[in-house]
Length: 640
Image (tube, rainbow, N blue to C red; front, top):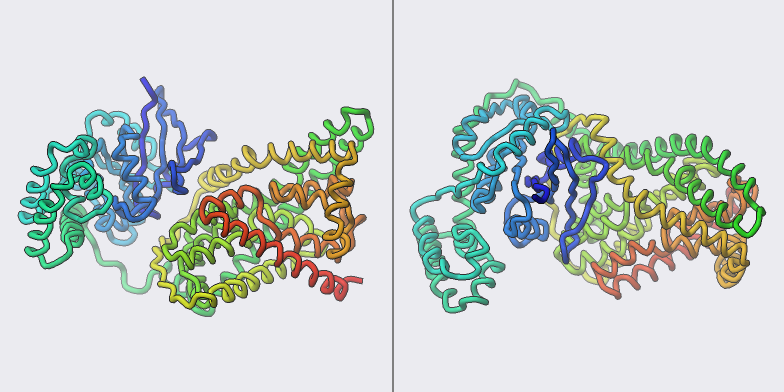
């Protein structure tokens, strides 16, 4: 018998991913749904003697086909990829969350409810009776506090026990709606399409006027569409509203009715709660930006000091080991390449990457990143961009690849084009390791902060110029602000490891291979040819040693390689003995802005086509050349 699959479904910020991270092991992996950039996470989980596959589906508000995440989740559920579905609900927003629950029930799936954040709800005066809720819905209900691990084991134990028994029954709506649902069902009952999709769910989607499902019926039986429209029009006439609003209103009313029966809401204590007072400061139009700058600077300072300390402790032994194997024969380049590749990951990238990812996870889990997005929304509009551009930009500081993928949420082709171009300019964690490992270490942390400020100014200036070509108003951003939460150390580490694993699995082998290749090129003197070809750029324009040319070449594959190959190409970990302060400044500025890595270029090609990819490469290279050239004069003015 194949391994059972349990899928987690829920609205954004319901604690679904926290629940997943609480049980996901080191074998957790991410993937994309076929044909789209919407991702999901999965992990094998063992409970007692039973092992099952746990899938964390994207956070969604409904089962519509308009949004990519909602559509792929719906298709996944319709194809019955999962044997069992756990609907994770935030108890603090129970009435709103139940609207998605009712749609899941319409799919007639094996289903149970995970009522999460119950203590959070109690603090807000919302007391939910799980047994009453279970009776109203007709499916099992379990309570958890996923952030603390409370009730998690019991949840999955119950899921395994009722997996073959707990099947949801679709809810009933008002007389008018039920009559038209029956009308549509009678029309489509013999269709092949209705054999693969629950009949009632398909009828409701047709009544809502959902084009995706309407097209399925139209392709099989076009003569039925006018008859379906007659049912739809009667519904509109009876309620005086568009059909999708009628059915949505039915779900909303039923969700409220269930909530009122299962929950008791008590008055909160008089006075403004501490969290609301905190939000008044954190999202203040003036203080909010000061706090945002302080948080960002603190993030970089902590990352630098922790990373610099770790890097200094690790670099020495590897440097001595490298010297031991150098010049030992034909096999020497291979051994030195392996040592340098391992040293590059352990001693150069990881010391900066681990604290950066950990601190980003901390800011995300406590609920600060959505508040930062809210503050930056106004800035986006001043640049002439959509407020949703905030989300890709924030993700870009971790990695440009998910940043570019996130731009898919922007409907306007014009705003999406500009966002894609600007997202590749964000200094990702790999570029951050270069900035902190060179500029902050040898020139001082303030120089690294200054470079980030320059990057923000460049983003604003370029975004403003690009938006001037098309004077099109960008719509506002509706963003859900989650409550502040205190994450556990275990959940933070799991999330950090989850993101760090991509470096270990994908980037490190490339770094190791690149290190060996560079040593081989050096042994065969091929690196001199590459350096000679790039000399007009490195020597004449940037004023750098010719030896750094090969590092810029390898940096196109992975940005971490730029820093690692620099140590290798110059033959020492003591960069200050080879490069002047001005040269370090110029090198880092150029690396921060020039051509994105191959992974980023590949995703750009897929998301925006070849025009966007070439435009990004040209824009980045032009900015890198101009800014690095200017950095030469800045360096000569500040450094003797």
